[in-house]
Image (tube, rainbow, N blue to C red):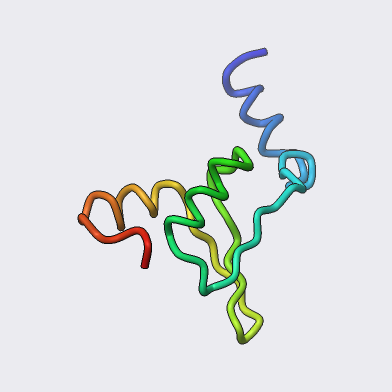
Length: 77
């Protein structure tokens, strides 16, 4: 299959075919340290964050690396 054919094949798939149904969901009060540990323990690169108002967000390993570690922030907060 050509490179273009492979890309066309992937882009024509439904999200459900590629998504991992084992979603890590964290409460908004979780510390970054707890989130990173949970992602490590579950082998996840991201976690969904559930807020009190019912809205959802996402935190990724890149967020932890760039926004916390690289800035020298305390991951326990």
